[in-house]
Amino acid sequence: MASPTSWSEENFSCPICLDIFSSPVFTPCGHNFCRACITKFWDEQAQCKCPVCNELFHARPDLRANILVSEMAAQFKTSVRVKEQPCVESGEVPCDVCTGTQLTAVKSCLVCLISYCQTHLEPHQRVAGLKKHQLVEPLDHLEERMCKKHDRLLELFCRAEQVCVCLLCTVTDHKSHPVVPLKEDYEVKMAGLGNIESEVPQMIQERKQKIKEIKDTVKLSKKNADTEIADGLQALTALMRCIEKWQEDFNQTVEEKLKSTEKQAEDLIKELEQEIEDLTNRSSEVKQLSHTEDHIHFLQAFRSLKDPPPTRDWTTVEVRPPSYVGTWRRSLDQLEETLNMEMKKLHGAELKRVQRYEVDVTLDPDTAASRLILSEDRKQVHYGGSGNKLPDNLKRFTCFSCVLSSQSFSSGRFYFEVQVKDKSVQCLGVARESIDRKANIALTPKNGCWRISFNKDVFVFHDDPVVRVPLRAALQKVGVFVDYDEGLLSFYDVEARVNIYSATGCTFSEPLYPILYPLDFDSRKSSLLIISPVKQTD
Image (cartoon, rainbow, N blue to C red):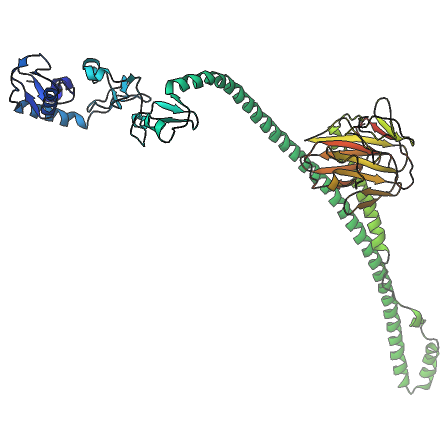
């Protein structure tokens, strides 16, 4: 006889619950059932009959335990309970009834809140009461489909709060809310899902493109950073060489003066030592002669003592310490000249970099004050004196003789150049879009205008307080560079290729427009301002 472990689960399954026997009993017709299953089955029937062969019993049979089947079922449970593992693959829903080999569920019951494999689903397909239960495709975590407050199935959708609710919720917390069956809102949202599904790939592509742009920007930034570091190191090395050369030349000048003084002192000391030696010898001769008593020898020797050895009058002789007055200044002047040449090279390189951000700027006649005259190509402006009859509008300046460009800039970097025919200009720079064009206000950063004025001697940046920078030569062409995101505004003398002044920490929060004001307040003299094309410097 085969052992229980070699049989299948069907050999020990109750025909009613389809699970392994629990306290098995047998009927007079010879069929085995779980005691609880057959008792419950007969309790629900008008007549007692066998669920398997339908044999009718006129009286409820006296059920007796089937000891052999009970022991064999117990052995079978023990042998397979621990050893066998679920055969449900990832992503599939397991049967909640299987106790041995856990099979994949084929249906889930929304009434029982249990998922069934094909075998354990059989009662729902056979028993009349179970046939009324709602079966759906296998679902995991069925307990989440129950209302936690009323323990009822979530079968409705509240559109007001966008949550699933049960029937009791519609008469309590969601009484006044619009509620529809889950299927209805499902179909509405499923229809809209198609649009989302088609939009998502495009959104993904846009974000991938943005990632590429960001990476390219970082790559370019790193390249620019490496170039800046290399250029900075080269410039610093050149400046250090200049300073080292200046230090060597200065030290050499001082050392040469010191050596000259030391040589003079050394020669005088030698001369003095020689005279001391001669005088010492004369003193010895005199002393020796003073002790002789030989008259003839004395008189003969005395003749050589009459003429003393030649000596200098040392009372006026002195060694003066070398004078270094003016040495330091002259050396610094030379260093300054050399550094200025190097700085000019650096400024030229800087100007060349910012000129790459050239933008095409034309003047907007709708913003020009009535006394201004614009050229036909809208690249030139000068003060005409008498007012033109122009239609007034919100964009036009009425208090100041200013004009804005047609172009505005809200991010990034831009650069333009303005040629100055006369040697004095009242206003040149940028202004924000919301600048008051009708009131007599100070044209300063506080009021939305970043401007300069200058004459042949002084450059002025109008801030609070104003910044004055002396000019070595009259400006003929001014370059204006703006880094919107960094809040940087720089002005350049294009002809001299130097940076005149840079304003940092500027707050740019609106579109910026280049602004020109060709009239000098003090002399009422008009300047011709020309927006000129950029010529790259060498």
